[in-house]
Each structure stands twice: as C-alpha cells, then as structure tokens.
Image (cartoon, rainbow, N blue to C red):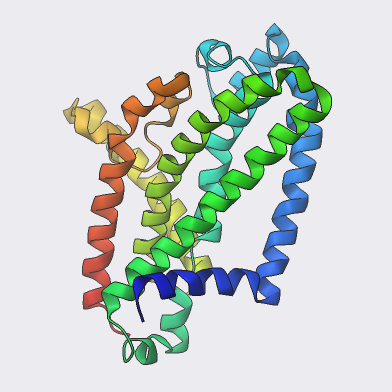
Length: 267
C-alpha cells in the first residue's frame, strides 16, 4: 500500500463508517451553535470596549490590533477563536492514527502489505487533509454568514479568507504531527489525547521554570506546538507568514521522533 492509499483510507474511516458520521454530525451541530450564538452576535460588538474586555478574559491580554488588523469583523472573530479552538479539536480528532491498530493487533497484518514508514506518513497525511477540510468548511460557513447578513462586506471577507486558511493550515500541521507521535506511544485514542494535553501542560511549566531560573533561552519559546499563537494573533494580512518556519520546524522534528518510535515499537 502506498502513502496515498493509506491517506485515502483515513477518509474512508471517517466518511464510510457510522462512528465517523456521528463525529461529523456532532461537530457540525456544535459549530453551527457556536457560529450562530458566538460569532454572529459578537461581530457587531467587536470594536466596543466591553467586547474587548470579554475577549481579554477569555484569551488573555493582547493588543487591540488583534481586531483592527482585519477589515471584516466576522473574519477577525473567526481568526481569534479558531486559533485557540481548532488545535484543541485536532488533538481529539487526530488522536487515533496508530493507537487502536496497535491495541487490536491489526498493525501486524498491515506491515505485511506495506512498511511502517508508509503507514505512519500515510495516516499523518490523511488526518492532516481532514483538518484542512474542517478549516475550509468552517470558514465557508463564516463567509456564508457574511453573505447572508452583510452581502456588501463579502468581497472584503473573501480577500482576507486565504490568509486565515493558510495560517490555520500551518498551525494545525504541528498538532497533527504531535498526535502522530503520541499515537505511536499508546494504545487508544483517549490515552493519546490525554498524554498530548498533559504532556503539553507539563512541558509548558517546565520550560517556564527553566526560562525563569536559568534562561532566557530564546529557542525554548518556540518548542511547543502553538507557542507562536500569542504573537500570531496580533498579526494581520500576509505578515502572519513571518512565523511560518516555527510550525514547519516543529512538524519536521515531531514526525522524525514519531518515525523513530514506530520503527522501534512493538506491534
């Protein structure tokens, strides 16, 4: 089996199974509720002091440029919320790349038809393409909201949408790679998600301790997936790509560790 075939099988597991459609329907309902009761009503208040205060409570203190860098209020809100919410969703939805096959023992049969490397990379590619689909679908709903409520603002929103799509694709790249690595180390999707979240939190505290007591070491500021989000959220337009090397480097390192792990692990 080639990497492409394995990646397509990930799509089949999502769209040709009852469990996959249950996940799709659940996510769709949650997103529609979020779109209708969070983004839509908040768009008209994005420039007010009260709304800025609420966002600071949710995401921490950051400059007003997080809003003013974007001409479309709906795109600005989608940008801010998706930067923090989609990575968390990715850590859940992309958790079962290798784990369940190891638990069931089916990995032993898969390696008779292809290499461990092909399985590891194919599953990663398939899950990443699913995350890209989520980005495209969610931002399409935001554009649909703009077209419905303020059609005169649609050209502006359409011009800003590619910036958001490209940056979210880069952000989620390292998270899918993280779950690819973690999924090799455990034997269930739940364990993979818990290990990733707990490991991220503990690493964040450890890095903070090292920086405060022995640092600063600038390179440690960019070690964890998502470490650039607090800076990225303040940027706008294509200036956001100035941080692109960070998730790309994180992805290469995480995939390298995952490739080493899957070649050494007991199937």
